[in-house]
Image (cartoon, rainbow, N blue to C red):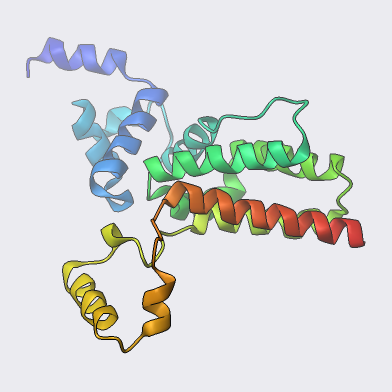
Length: 214
């Protein structure tokens, strides 16, 4: 690379480009791949050039969280509480599915992210407007967050079972040794999105019942 080309890349360097490059690295090689050296290599500059725009790796990680949370589509201000909570949860999950490493980073950096504080402010606002007490809002927020950040695929999803495990399941179910389990799968199709929404609706139903009882 010629010297003038390197100068051009340094001139184009910005905090946003650095953060986007870090997210791309995490998407391709995992969160552990994110380092100032790797980001610099991806952008075609020396790692030291990055420090003119962002102070350190911790700041990069915080900025990654802010950018991802900022991509969560927010419901309209006049949305009903269930629509608001459902909309936020589904939109947040969409971001999580696009970046599987994100839950771990969000959990680790949540106390240093203004974007997360803003997101949570909207969540507790929706619960508060619906008449939930502070304690129930606290419990409900943790429950919804756990559902969004900790959701995993169903054990019966054939795409999630390794080949040796799939063979074991087929043999076990075909042997007749587990008739109730085999019968329970009759006519069942796996739809990760539908099951996520179904579980979320059950949570919202339960929360509404608890609120009304109190």
